[in-house]
Image (cartoon, rainbow, N blue to C red; front, side, top):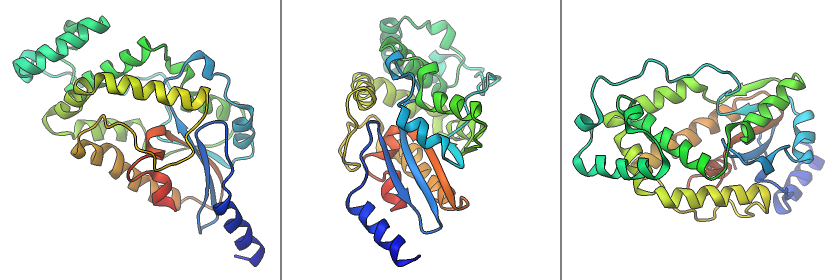
Length: 264
């Protein structure tokens, strides 16, 4: 690296550029220049269109990097039904908790009865987001994918939907701890969603080490956050030199073991 580039990198580290969305720039030793975007997978209508500055960065990028390309229409969850009912898989207390939340949100237990427990957790989380006014069409990564496709910008997946489903299927007890955490932290998760919406509509956080409310047990946080952040770190470091817009779930950019801290 030339003296000029070293000085420029040091200046950027001391005075990082601030964006009107949850975004930050990181340059890696291998010549990979990353603009990390804290995505929300479901958004509000006010979150569309994307900020013009973000689109400008995308236009000049060599590729868009996402967790998974969700622009297709095929469901990755087909054929995963359980042959055991919820009453057989949950304790009376757990079933009562699920029944109460399902009644609150208008979800039919009959429709959930044979789904894997991890998938029920995801259905409940998506339903909660919808009740807060969020829709998949306004999700940040979905909008970025559409913008990249329209401009013929290559898309790189960090994981892919098949890998994500495989990870969920490997959770112990059919993903019981994910369902239990979802129901236990139901109201906390709603507040966290509203906070992240505010990052896009009002102002993003300025400190990647900020403390966020916990909605996962420690063991689940390790699997869904820490281990994936570490895998993404190596994946990003292995990219060819170039400029990339990298959209990952906003929670991966903040808090303990966040992706930016690993890359730095």
